[in-house]
Amino acid sequence: MSKPVKLEVLIDEMESPFEGYYYYLNRDTGEIVMVGEEIFTKAEDEDPIDGLEVWEQTEYAQATDILEHPSHYLELPDKEEINEYRMMENFCYSLDDGPTKERLISTIQGRGAFRRFKDQVDQLGLKKEWFAFRKNCYREEALDWCELHGVEYE
Image 1 (cartoon, rainbow, N blue to C red):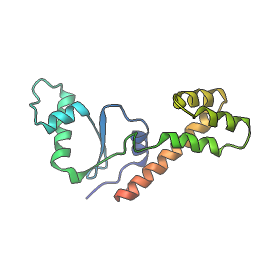
Image 2 (cartoon, one colour):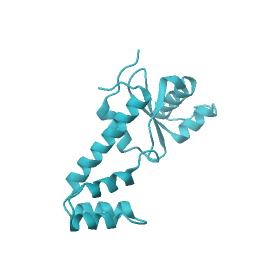
Image 3 (cartoon, rainbow, N blue to C red):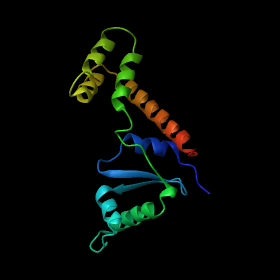
Image 4 (cartoon, rainbow, N blue to C red):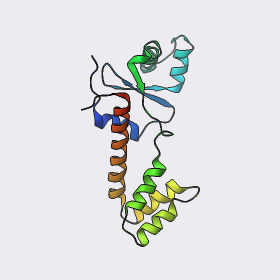
């Protein structure tokens, strides 16, 4: 029997993953499991765990379980699958017509768009609105992901 995932935990993990880690939903427990690429590779290669720290051994055991029981786990979408640029773009177009909207739209063009956007949102006093908008986008991503994979949530 699978347990539902806590939607807010899922959203948080999708929103701010650590670089170099894989994130999985354990369908049986409803928990999110995080495994580093290096440890995952060791588990795939069945490298011995001698010399690993206790926390690495725990991570290794999780990686091994994922590899041995892939149907019990679902990999969470990564940053490549979640289009944060589109979120920024949608935020810009959600604003009322005027100089603020135009200014933000121009900041997301070309290289360095994320940094310029963040700086402009801060300067324009729209930080709170942007974070609320972004959080809602991630909520929608999480709900869509749950629906696509038949994952229950609470």
